[in-house]
Image 1 (cartoon, rainbow, N blue to C red):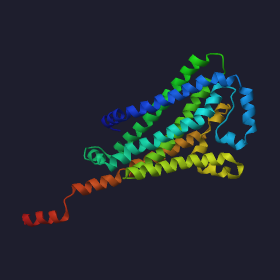
Image 2: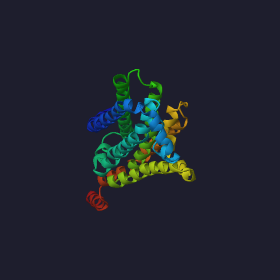
Image 3: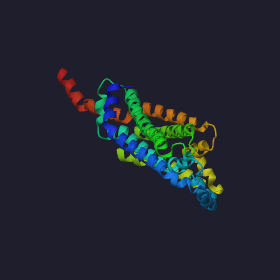
Image 4: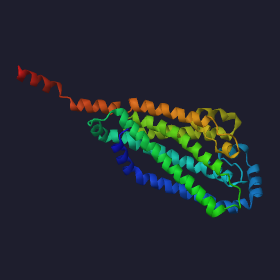
Length: 288
């Protein structure tokens, strides 16, 4: 990894990271602010949810209202945070790789004594650092909201809340790896953004549709988001091994992106730096 490039890219993208981090922290704090009012009417809300089709409850992660983490796992971790981190993964992956290739910045980096693997690894570390910053801010805001707004009056399991954030990080570590691989393999920014966005939100749509009915539940098997189940963590299940599969899949994506990602631009840079065939023949004739 190139420390100088990492510092520069973090400096360039820090404002965007902080915007998403503050936005996520605000939303999670809002969820804690809303919960005391929700907790007073849990029975009525549970009755309303019970009248809904079962698929609707699964699709929108309605995990109950008995505890604060059950409420936020459905209202925030099951929907809002997924959309925020999906957008971050697609946009940031495109900015870190395809945009630099498309605008010629990558050619300058390749002209320095830096290997393609180091550049790709550095950009991947910037991407992971952004996810860590956003989820770290979300976790801290959650504990601050619990201490300030809930206190000891409402049930809240801090360990499960931490696991919710860990599962979200592993899930989007994998999603970002897929987007990073697409961006690294493309030399056009718009094409990379469209393709990675279609893949990520296509996976999300398949998972959402598969939750709506048992007849189409097989569609969830086609989506990586089927591994992300915050309701299972809130329900007291052990940390699912499926989350670890997501991390392993992301490592494969990053490794492939490292070896194949900058090849197109690297080849173009070598061609541009090489003398034209006619110029080479003229030089040979003069020497003769």
